[in-house]
Image (cartoon, rainbow, N blue to C red; front, side, top):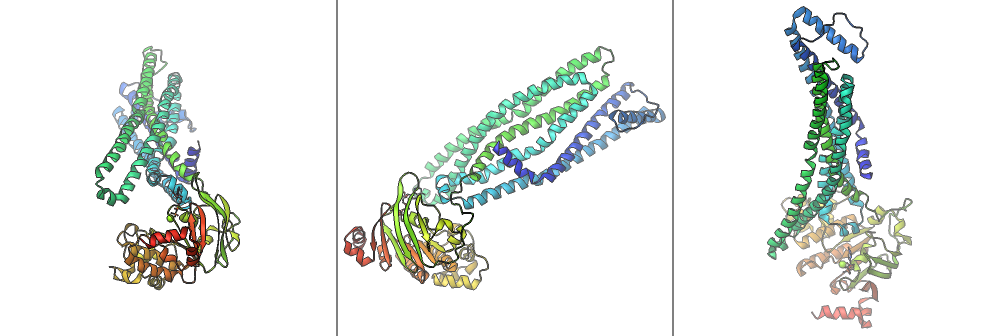
Length: 606
Ligand code: ADP
Ligand code: MG
């Protein structure tokens, strides 16, 4: 139910278009019915049974007075100009009425377009906005491709199933009711048959609809897996080719692709049942009506005039179409709701990192960062087991230790990518959970092992997320980061596109761009997570220089793999299995003869 409300809420915004759509659809239905009722006088003329109305009826806007007036006018034409001329008039009238009907039908559709596209646009934006604020942990648990599938494929599924059915949902019930009312007016007896048989038909159709939704959900899930595979393959193509794993990848993809194919066949077959099934059921109703109506006519008691009966059949046959398209729309909606559920899962995902409503502004960093008994776990296994650490302003603190010891995790807690399970982190005595998230993150610059760059120009990558940045400022930042020289040599300088994730650059160049970005941001606190460990020693030297420039006059938390790069830190913190094992300067730690010395000797003598 929640999913229907969600969709309805999005459609609500476009109520004015919906109203116009309903209005024009109603007009189209009215003109359709009126044009079809003309078959009655047409047959009357042909068979010579058309009664001549010679007295001008009183006009009072009732259906009877309108038909009577029409018959009076027609009678005048027959009397004055002959039957053939009257036939001409009717044909002419039918053309005009059909033109109007289709014009209104088009106008109805004309106003559906903005609803359909607008709703999808709004939903897409909503999902994207949500992705931006979701905690990082969400993405390590969900497959990236599945999320992409939900934001693209599932949304277009909603568009093509639910929103393309909106018209039918607005139009068809009105049409059916209007047709039924007309039929009832023409012959209440015969209409009773219709009224009994239609709900029965609806029941049968509803049954199949339910199983369709389940199949659709499975299909969308498989689609998510497929997109995941494509995404992984795109980013891992180098390794796939290097390890001759093409056929492995191909088989893996082919098997999921095949399962998807089988599922989809099943689903389309179910979905496509809607239209023929309802047409067939409609035909049965029609035959029943024809049989009983025919008996009334043949009875010759004058209960039912043959031309009225044929008019009745003509209008009844028009119910079949909206009933059919309504059944189809119903099935489509069932299919689309499965996708809506998947999109809603993202939108309803818990936003674990929440800014308190009365969060404090914190424009500057003045004294110290303090970890107080901080514990953390991704799942059940503890990753940080009670960390206590003081970082005073201006200090350089190095985090070293085996891989998996919890260094990255410890650094990630500072900008609140995750929140600790217990314990607090304070900046200048204020718990970071009390600080405005944007303010907190403005205090920090982060350079990771893998430089995160975007498919954009050098300029935009350095000035990322900042407004009103001049070319001079970017250039100055690049110079500090040892990057200006290579940027200058590029084809369009600062306006060269660097390709997907900076694919057109070397690792060292990418890293220097990340550093330039941090320089430009000019944050008081720096977090460097193995910023040089992915580099060869030549580029490491360049990057290391850049880092030295960057660290001047700042407080830094440096995670280092190579101990040689952090020997001069004010304090080296040795992490071991989620605990701080030792702490001190390089010389102090060496003299302790502990974990650090062990690590150092291993690296030194390698
Ligand atoms: P380090 O940076 O010291 O190498 P990390 O902080 O990255 O260590 O990881 C510490 C532990 O947490 C490791 O055992 C790792 O397997 C686990 N871990 C890291 N990131 C995640 C994650 N996103 N989800 C689950 N476990 C994780
Ligand atoms: Mg790490």
